[in-house]
Image (cartoon, rainbow, N blue to C red; front, side, top):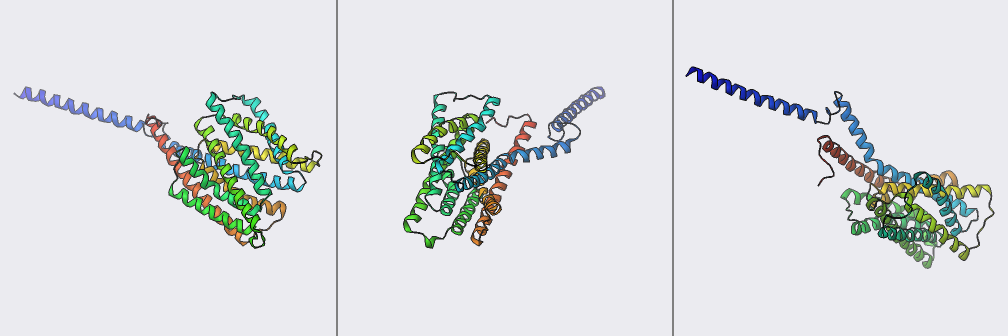
Length: 373
């Protein structure tokens, strides 16, 4: 009886010991799978490094969008300087496209991307993008040439985020958060104040006022599909940026050259300073389009559009530095609201992407596929 009791006790002890050993192994395995201890004894440092990398990745689209806005600001200044030098408007657009194409050629030689889409559908989308992009540039030129520039500038910059968000929600199923909407409304309010500060409406005729509203609205309708197409080509279809820019610049150069000789008398003899203005215009426009294309690969279409309102304070700063134009109180108030809207949408977008990156890193650490549904 005592022998059988001893054997039974021994068996129970073995079972308990085995179960304890199994738990210890499972705890050790779980400890190995935690983000801090996966990469070695310096778990805390690795965890901090993971958070830093997640923060940097989250800021990629925001930084590219802000860079695009800065390049667009220089583009606007070079257009103003070239126009003051006596270069006709359509010729400025033609030279801009030509410089963009020449800037793209070395990149094409180095990267050697596909010059056409992978199938007929992609080629059709590229052709539509060429039409929309060049039409948007032409309408922008008309809105600043035949209307009051202050009102045109305000309507285009203020209404584009609204149009892009509406079209993006319809065709790309892109939804807006509450903070995104508040940031866009702040930016629109600031742009309206800025437009009033740049314009003396009391001294305008009714016809000029109507043109200053209708043409910029058409320009916004043209620019919004342009952003949606860039997002669709890069973010959805995965067409290389250089391929899209090649089609835009190549066909745009030919069309704008024909329009230049049809509508204007081009000026080919120009001083060195004007030549440098034109080169600066083409290079800055190329960099602006390239960076916004790269941003649209990772961001929804309305986010780079809203962040490109950063062009407003930069343009006022450049106007003060190069053209010696001092902003008035309405312009300062408008710029303040625009900057507040930019800070809100930038911070919210960065925080959202950072949380997604941290979650993705955690799932990869635990050997889960973050892209698996």
